[in-house]
Image (cartoon, rainbow, N blue to C red; front, side, top):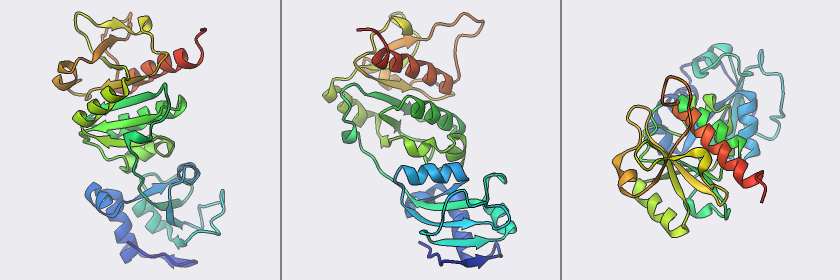
Length: 267
């Protein structure tokens, strides 16, 4: 934990606070240990605050930050451009970096009788997770569940690629076994994009009562665990020369069809 002081200025990258922030930026284990993480960029920080993430303070660069939101009620430290360039993944994010406490959500917080849930099995690429979170935000998915995770929700690349929609989603870690127990208890339909003899066309499904969608890894697809447990398999119709989509694109297609049926289909 670090302590910020109002109107303090840091000009050296060797400062103890800056070294602490660099560890938060670079090391997943350190983020998990401290339950803290960094957010750079004006829009991203606004979304974090708007969605109830507890801010521990802001670091800003006088020559860049243009006061797009008021820092008066927060702990804050001005930093030199040299320090900012050491900390920031991007150099054009408004000259501001925030530090926040992580949030934890559980499956029991899902109360919608017709939920839309995205389940990601061992997703590997932060950029894909960020793109998926943007689609989940767009249709107001009820939860994003990471089973047996390989990627850290609070990885700076996830925050960057999600353009801050990390904060507007309910993010849940779970084992595959625990999630399956929960979904059976809730009697919610479970679908996955996967090809086999009994695979159904996406547009032939009735998704109007809510659904959980399971998506496998980018490299190997869905594991045998879900297939052995009787997940219903679905194919996305395609008329081109390839037979699969990037996982983030497949998620978007399935989510929008589910959202359309729940919210816009005629009774």
